Length: 306
Image (cartoon, rainbow, N blue to C red; front, side):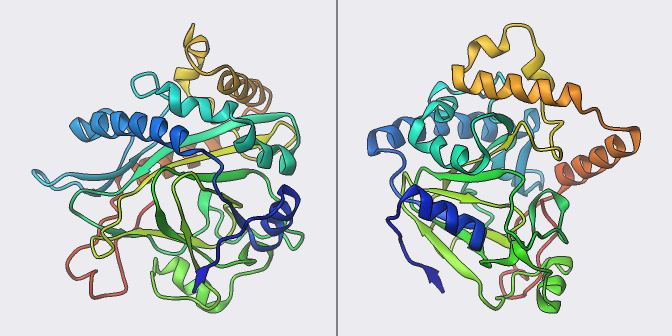
């Protein structure tokens, strides 16, 4: 099932976001804006592909002589920062939705760039992000707004509307813990055009794919913000944000969000147990690959991934 395009008011998008766990706002960025962002994203992709070990790259293949990547974390790190991408956080139409959901006082959480691999395709299994597979809230309340800014036509995203508001079914739980890509009841595939933005609650059950069969060229900004009033999450004020002078080099709106992240993290320290848990997760993710083997192309299982 494919989700149909919509052209709604901001209020109706907010209602849909709470009800189904995601919404697509069409044409947030103009063709000229997309063009500039796409050119900037290509520079990031080229840097990472040239030396993926120098960054927190996402891999579909780590075999010597056949390394292939599908994204990079922390795209605003100094060696990767691109003004055209950082400027997204100063784009009023883009940020209007997050402010409508979370209020005026926001903090930065994450910013990654995702792309289509060159050789090895991937199919991610069903999951909820941030390793909170069992979390749900019957009210649809969100702790954050996560978004995919599509810089090319994109049909990678699949989700189960409303799954952020209820416990998982037996079939869904089996798929999540079995890392399955099998079709699930109620799932929809979301088709976007360049300039569209998917705003999502990451507690919505979802998965992504980018296969050779679809001949899909993908360039997606994958980012996240939280309210300063939110008491969960955080501890994402990465060390580079604290380097003297760094915040002076990025877009002013982004600098404010990052300074808010630093402020929140400093006032909400985590204990040693939680710090160790996060390090374990980070270590596991950095060692993972998302690529499909030849058997995976005809089988329902694929290697564990982020």
